[in-house]
Image (spheres, one colour):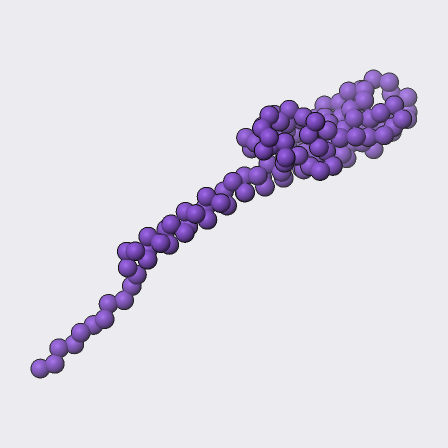
Length: 141
């Protein structure tokens, strides 16, 4: 009589443990990078939202507006998905809302000089890691 032996197939416990370890290492690398990507995106989106108001701001100033133009006058709405927008007589500011922890409380500000030139500055970020995430066109001060 002949007995049939059947070869078992599948993964050994050590192979499964190696796969779990590799996934853990990849997750440890990917999650911080993804978090930084989210923070950078939030700042860039906030900058884009207030940048659109510079044209309206210029129109209001050229029409003789001495005080801070209203958000309606410069074509902006607040709050938005990314910002609480405010204006002064010389600036448009975006306080980032619902931000990742690296950039929590960040404020992006377009400042207008008396000659009509615009400069941008990011402020209110406390961590060194968060300061490095500021948009290149709006560096942290």
